Length: 275
Length: 306
Image 1: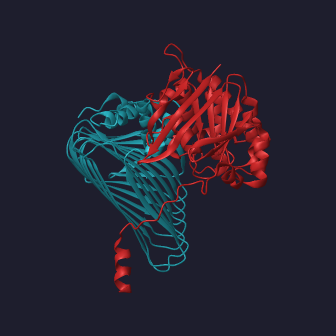
Image 2: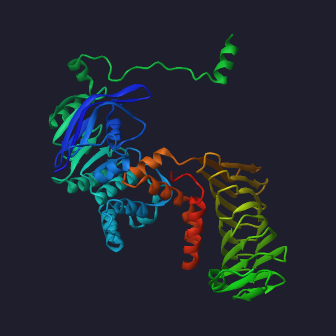
């Protein structure tokens, strides 16, 4: 059974601390939901687990099945079983969706194994049909010209074919209408098994109506400040997050930063004009 | 010069070389003018090889005709010539142009396209040439519903120098143009594109589109694109753009996060530039050869795999 352990992780970007000693353990078969106000580090957590080079780990560790992955290349983490369904999947012009997914699946095979393309075509088409993505999907360029909903469904399609051990779904509900959200929820729920640990990052209860979470975490200022069951989802949906300010004794969820001037010519001209 | 077997074995071939001019195709050939009439689904391969003793080759597409054409410009010596495409009323053509050779040489090409009423011309060009290339590419849309679409791939490496001037003239209302340039430069190569589209007053309902994407694979490689729109009419659709840069970090992260190695991820991103041209090559044997030439040209001296 897969196990992801995040231990006292402190992460910074450009000198600013984003994750502040966060710890989380996700086992295969578990579904965790991470909620929290904007800018509290939820997406950063997912990106750093996947190995995004933009972030710097100051201290702490991330272990997958007992092995530290913080010095592991991004692609190796993926092949070890990590998956990140991204909030804003990038467009890669000229690369067809099918070629991309086929290459990704082939990258997981052992050296003595070969991808059976004929069989894979059927698997791809089945996954696309289950997500109601249309027959032309395989020939379309990766995410190019996709609607917001199509991009999110395409992330789930990749997840279903790559069969990860631990998957982070970063705001997979944004950009989805009610029907598409239900469809995505049903497809993800079908994938649930003791071999898959899920981490859902979301702002809204509606995703969790379709994908049941075992544990709900609230993240504030780069750390998990509260964990509990479904009752937390209802409370957040009804009352927002302000009640946490009282409970935690804080004024703001985000560090306030003063705006600063870029010192453009336009600004100088304007100052001169006022004088 | 002796042509390689993969060129001499092509069906429906017209060959211009220093050895001979031969025509084994359904197209007519007279005074260096190749003519197409009627509906012909078989692609004609026009091979222009070294030492061409001619300065101009013409392509005439009669009214209501349809033709498919692959123009292969092949050689190892300096060459200079003109290609003229004349599309008469309601003719249509799919033209593939491949420019490559065996060693560094200078090539100067003047390519003119003139389209009559309702004529439709789709061109795919792959420039895999080594050395210096200067090309002037002019499109004249003479009558209503004339439509030109051109996808161009240029790969430069080593010390290659490419200078291309593209001009589209919308000379009648309701004329359409779409130029799409994909440029890859590695090592100390340099690619310069000057792209302009002109719609004069009164030529309403026209559509003039230019897209330019450049990928820099070398620290000292250069791509310069100057897209220009010269529009003197309100009721038109026109857009242009140029995006030039190195491999995008976000694209790379996305592909790596799916388990592709960095080398494979970069190859896949680059293949996004080359795919439209390679897909357009019909003959599977020739396609394999040109695919390898494209791969070698990209990989040869570039540092993107490091």
